[in-house]
Length: 191
Image: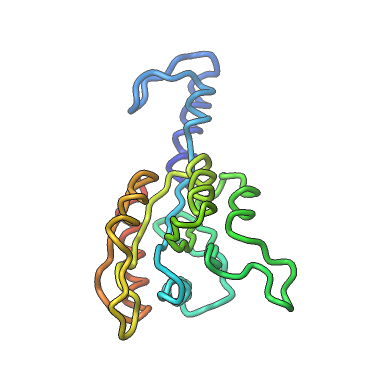
């Protein structure tokens, strides 16, 4: 069971009209429920950076699995990033990451892929929508996998920090090693 749900159940069990002492001070029952947000762990890298391959490795090598269980939490995985074309010719039912974020209710924890293209207005819009529904935690793949000198810039990382916690992964390793590092980051940041 998710930590936010456990806290909400605890509040439910103590009475609706009472004021509760919490980590952030005193809040009423309804304020506590509104504050409870699931986590969104966001794998960050530019186009063709290895985000999807990392998520494939996280799901045991499957392109089709959309869920993964980590430390007792069931995460929904959204592989398609904001830099992916949402409507290839033969898949008209796919939606953009921004559309997905707008429709998402914010009840389940998720793992998403993101391109930090802040020059595009939609990136900030997307992060604003996600921040309303989730507690954001970013795992940044600093370098492009393969022979490249391309990196996620300090400016891009700084902008991500305004939305949530950021960890920068600077190693240039295969997808399975990246997935293990991502899983470790998620394990360490579930509280």
